Image (cartoon, rainbow, N blue to C red):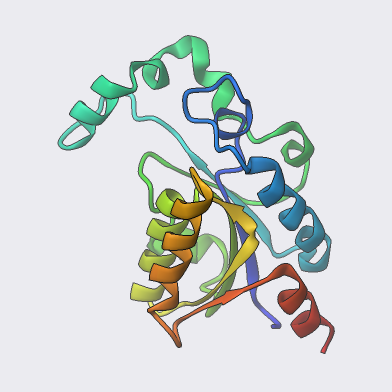
Length: 183
């Protein structure tokens, strides 16, 4: 897996804190899986952050009508990575949309051909990022137990959908990834 990057999707306070309207219930489970993987990808870990746009446009206008708190400057610190990840020296890819993979992200990471992906939420930003990456020609391992959805059923449905994209996408466990890294 030389040259492979670990991409940790949206491990932010806004998805971690239970009182946030966007809390991901199994955030801690996803974080525990990423915690096991991060040390094995030293120098090849990148984080993404979902950031609300200053001025939503198009389909985002009604979206933010439903979630006005997300545009309130008083909540800006909730977009920070969780404290445990804030000081890890790693690139951070900020995007105002669900998908985080684009030409700029690829260039930032040196045009990788393979990504290992985990984070939140499986059924939104993980799914959107993975599909954009494979469309750009990057193969992806989605780590099922280093990801979390808005519910266990939503998480599984997203994993099942991504599993349809074999061989570009493989759904793996932390143990499977660690075993491949050791081989």
